Length: 550
Ligand SMILES: Cc1ncc(C[n+]2csc(CCOP(=O)(O)OP(=O)(O)O)c2C)c(N)n1
Ligand SMILES: [Mg+2]
Image (tube, rainbow, N blue to C red; front, side):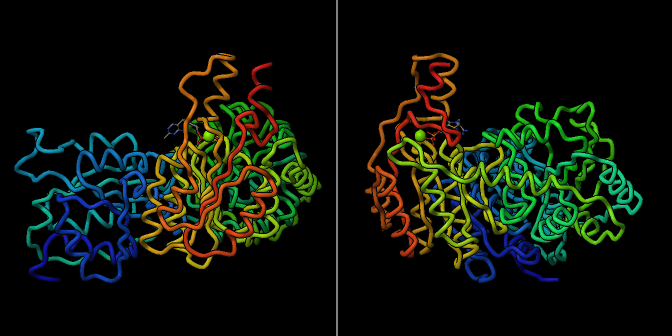
């Protein structure tokens, strides 16, 4: 039990006890006491960012990589509202994260004090738990609970408001011991039923990823699926859940999926869904798999009881840790049928994921194909939202774990901050942020953070002078009536250079391939400004004018 410490010092020591080794922040006067406590605690690497949206995205991505909450500190009203995008993404992406918000002093509360917001009310609907620490003596309890809540069941974000005057109070007390994610085993009877149901199936498909899926889950689930020839598809933006090198990898669901995979899922007589929520993007608006899925058996394995039998009716619902499930399945020693479908689905995916030269002056399919050949297998690919991401989702081979940092909730601006977090967490790996011209300028200023910390990462800005995705939908709904979707852009290569990056501007496939090679040979910041034609809009080969004529 320590005496004479501030609540802020106890808070920081409680974070260290929970294994926190990094925080992302934009400072504010509301939590100076925390910054002061961090001054002489080397266990925590403090990353000072340029906008709280970027800082919160970094924390979300860090949580996705480590499985323990990524930590962000932001100041009251203006900082917290900026950071809210990261909280929303962590919620929809099921990623563990804790956002601390410096709050107004307790004597100022409820007068609409300077930058005051009722944070538990503001964040309540977009996080797992939002609370305020009023009593310094309870700091250890709140920190341990924040970690437990962020990691338990379906992981997600927690928001804790910390009043300025509470942080400077002196308090005695010690951190609570480290909490771990409870790993509930799969019930043996239910496992027997799973195996019997799969054994009776003619055309089963697995859809996996999410909810604390980790390297162990991946390893065992892949073993299991390979052993029985089970086609293993990944949920939207969970492509690193199964190695792309697996002989039964069937590709990813989500936007622009392989039509053959969609047919396979629709025609499956049994779906083994592990970790995935079967959200709107994965199921294309709840159509690829319908909530009642007539004629199909649905086995749903998820660590959170709230997810089971909620949107989707499950024929068999297993509430357990995905790694526990996968290990038990991999080591199951009763013989069950083996299917040809895994190899077949893998061939269909491989064909779909192999780029063919197209008409475009700068062919992004060929560029990603060249990256697959020349960049390391464990390269981490990060992206935000926009059409540009489609080429990487379709043609990049996500072979390592983690190797995909991409918001399942489709928030723009995620790629660069996620790449900053990845480059700091994995300094020996290649990290690539792929961004659109719209997407990039949402958080492109975090290149300053990358430069400040000497990080090695490459940014590819795909510039079609448009909010292309929206333009594409606009052309379909309101042909020929372009409204609010055109962008006049800066010189992105010069922008990169201003942060000290090596950069190049490319307009053709040949120039792009050469720039990629050169970028790979450099260290530090690298930026490729890839100028593309808005007409050439989707990895599926669709064009804006093609849509117009529909
Ligand atoms: C934060 C945020 N704002 C708005 C949107 C809506 N939105 C989705 S994609 C998109 C356009 C993306 O443009 P760009 O980054 O240039 O990529 P492109 O589609 O042109 O490849 C917009 C505005 C969003 N998903 N997220
Ligand atoms: Mg664009």
